[in-house]
Amino acid sequence: MSVRASPRPGTDAAAIARPVVRDRSAFAIGVNRVAFLAVWVAYTAIVALSLRAPLLRTGDAQQYVAMADQLAHLRPPSLSPDEVAAFKAWLAGQPAASYYPDAVKAIDQGDLRANGRQEFSHFWLYPLAAAPFVRAVETIGLHPGYGLFVANALLLAGALVALVRAAPPVVALALLASPALWFVNKAQVETFTFSLLTIAVCLILRHRYLLAALVAALAATQNLPIAAAVPLFCGVGVWREWRAQTWTPQFAMSRAMIGRCAIVALTIAVCLLHPAYYLWRLGVVTPQELNNGFGVHLPGWDASFAPFVDPDIGVCWWAPAIPLFAVAGACALLTNRIPAPRRRDLRWTAVVATLLGGWFLLTFAQTTNVNSGGTMSMTRYAMWLLPLAIPFLAAFAEAGASFNILMLAVAAVAFPLAAILFDPAQPERYVTPSPQSAWLNDWLPGRYRQTPEIFYERHRATDGGVHGSAATPGCQTILVARSDEQQPCPLTTREGSAAQALFDAGWNAVWITRSGFSGWGAPGVVGAIRNGA
Image 1 (cartoon, rainbow, N blue to C red):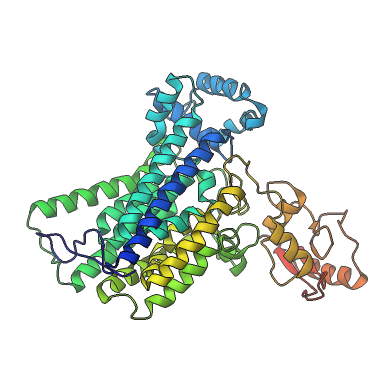
Image 2: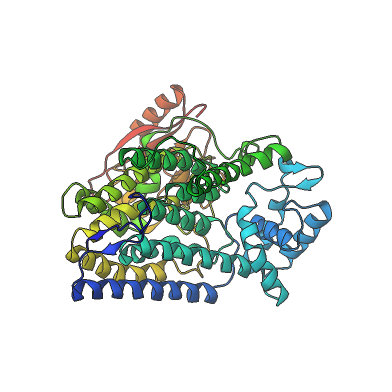
C-alpha cells in the first residue's frame, strides 16, 4: 500500500499532515479497513484479558503503587516513616498469591533516604500520570493497581491512534502481537515507555520533530538514556528543513517561532526534571548511582545483542515476525517500490530509529541486572526497541498490496498466539530457561553462548548474579565457577585441566561445552567471567 504525505493548506512543505492513501482501489481500501478494525479488536481483547487477570506484583511494582498513591492524595512521592509503616502494612495485607507481601522488605532503601523520607529508585512522573485514576479506583474500593492499569490502557490507545495515522494499520497490529500485551495491567513503566516512544516515532514520520523530542523527553523521565533521542530528533529535524529550504536561522517573533521556542523550552525542562529532582533530594543525577544499577564499560557482542538474539530474553525469539518484517522493510527502502516523498520520510525515520537503537543496545549492556525481573521471558528493555521497528514495518507494508496482506495474515495468527503465551494472568518468568534456550544449550551447545548471568540465574532458579556454577540438565553446557567446590556435572580430565589453566590466567568462571545430543555442538573450554569484570 503506497502512501504520500500531503501538506496542509497554509503550512510549509515540511509540515506534513496525515498520510493519504495513494492506492485508492476498493480492494486496497478494504484491506486497510480490515486491518484497522483488527487493531481495535486486538486492543479490546488486551483490555479484556488484562481485566480478567489478577493484579500481580512484578518487578518494582510496589514502588509505582506507593508513589501513585501518595500523589493521588496530594502528598509528596517520597514516604515519611509513618507512611512507610502504613504502606508496609498494606503490602502485608494483600493476598499471598499477588506477590505484594513479598515486597515488604524491598521498601527500605537506606541509600535513597533524604530528610527522613524514603525515595525510590524510579521516578514519579509515570505515577503522577496514573494518580487521578488511582484516586478514582480507591474511591470505589478497588486496588490502586487498577488505576495504573487504566493509565496504561489509555497510553496504549493513544499510541495506537498515532500509529494508525502515520502508518498502515497492520503495523499497529504487528506490534500488538508481541509481549507488549503482557505489561498493560502491570504497575510498571514499560507500557508508558513503549507508548511514548511509539508516539515519538510516529511524529517523526509526520515531520513533527520538536513534538517528537518533547514526547521522548517525557519517556526519558523514567529512563534517562532515552534523553539521547531529544538532540537526535531535533538535529535531524533542523537538517531536513534546512535541506528542504524551509528553515532559516532568523529570530522573527512570529506565532510559529514562539510556539517552537515554547516547545524547546518545555522539552529542556522535562529533560532536566529527573536529574534536577535527584540532585536536590539525593545529590546524584539518578538513584541508580546509589543502588549499583549500572556500570560504565565497553560491552562485548554477547551483552550488546542479547536483547535481540538471546533465546531467553531476545525479541527475535519472542516476537519473530517483527524483526523479520523489519529486515524485509529495510530491503524495501533500498528499492523504488515506495513513492519518492514517502520513501524519503521512511528512510530518514529509519536512520533515526537505527541510531537510537544502537544507543539503546549500548546502554542496555551497562545494566548490572541483564536478566532482570518484572518481565515475561523477553527482557523488558526490548520494549524500547519495538517502536523503533515502525518505519521498517511501514516500508514493507507500503511496498505493495501483497506485502500488506501478508503482514495482516501473519499478524492475525501471531496475535492469538501471543495472547495465549503472554496472557496477562501469568506471573513474571525470568528464572527458568525458555524451551528454545534449553534446546539450544543441550542440542547445539557452544553455537551460541549466553551472558553468564542469564544462564546462571535461569538454570539455578535464582536472582542476583553469578554466585557459583550452573549446567543444563543434560550437562552439555556448563558454567564452572572457580569458587564453587561442588560442581553440577563431573568433568573429564581434559576439561578440568583446561578450566584450571583459565582460572590461573585470571578467569573467575569458564564455559565448558560438549558435542550436544545432536553431535553438532562446539565442544571446548573458554573463559566466561574474568577476574574484576
